[in-house]
Length: 388
Ligand code: SIN
Ligand code: CO
Image (cartoon, rainbow, N blue to C red; front, side, top):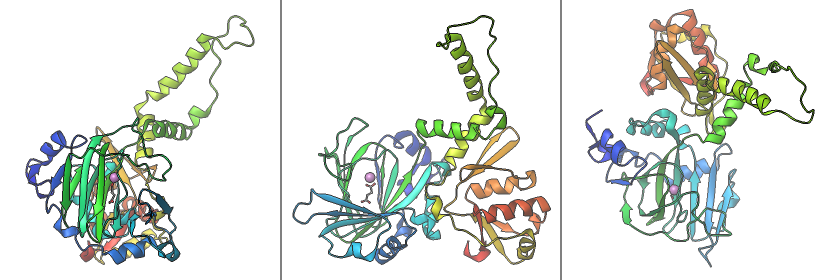
C-alpha cells in the first residue's frame, strides 16, 4: 500500500500510520465528498425515535449554557418538545442501518476491521456542541452537512480533571492550538486523548468513525469466560504432594505456588488464550442491531444458487479470522465458529469486506451447511447481486 490516498490528503497510508495515527491530528479538505447527503437531518431525527437505536439528546440550558442535561435512548417525540436554543442529538451505529454508510468504512482500508467500533452521527443547530472533552479512542470526524468549527488542544489522560456536577465528562479549559471550520466532505483525525471542541456553525451533521481496543480488565473477564468452556479445566486439581502435616489454618507458599503454576501454564497456552481474545474482540458493540432472520435451509440455498445473489458480512455483526500456518480459525459475535476447509477461503474474503457471488462454485454440502448456519445467525447476509 504505497500509493497516496485522497482520504488522507495525498499522503500514503504508511505515512499516516507512522506520523499521525495515535499521535497527532490531521485535517483533510474534501476527503470524502460522497458522504454528503447520505443522511439528511430529518433521517437522523427519524432514526433517533426508532426504539432499537442507541441515541442521546444533549441540551444546554438557555439561561446558563454551562448547565447540561443528557437523555439517553429510547427517545420519544416528547423529548424534542420545548427544546432550548442549544442541543445535540447523537445517534450511534448508523452504519448498521444504512448500507451506504457501512460502505464508507472502505475509505479506511489501512485500519483492520477488528479495530472499528461504529459510525456515530451528531445533529445540532447553530451553536450546538457536546462540550470540550477528550476520548480514549481514535476518531475520524467527517462533516456530512453544514459546517462545524473544531478547536483542538492539550493531550489529556486518566488524571485529567473534569467539570464537577455535569452529566458529561467536560474539560474546564482547552488550550487551543488548532481552530478550523469543516465543510461537507472535510475530515479531521483526532488521536486518543486530544482535547477537542466542535461547535455547529449552522444546521450540521458530523460523522464520527470511531475505533475501539479491548482493555486488560475485559481481556481477563474473557479469559475466565472462555476457559470455563473447556471441561478439562473445570476438574479440581490434584492435591500437591502432601508428605507432612502443616498448620491447619495456613495455606503454604508452596501450595500457592503450585496453584499459580497451574494457572500460568494454562495462560501460556496460545490456543486457549487466542480463543479468549478473539471471543472478546469479535463481540459486537450493539448486539441488539443484529437482525433476526427467517430460518433458511440448505434446500433454499440450492434454489438461490442461480438467482444472482451475493454473500456479504452483515454490518452489525463481527467476523474475524486468525491464521497460524495453514490453519485458519474464525470467530463471530463473541464465539468461535466451526467452518469447513472448503469454505474457509471464501469466508476470509467476506471477513475482509468483500461480497462473493452465490453460484455453483459453492455447490458443496459442507459449504451450504456452513452458509445456512452463518445466515441463520445473521453473521452474513444475502443481497441481490445488483445491490452490492
Ligand atoms: C460531535 O460530533 O459533536 C461530537 C463528536 C466527538 O467529539 O467525538
Ligand atoms: Co469526541
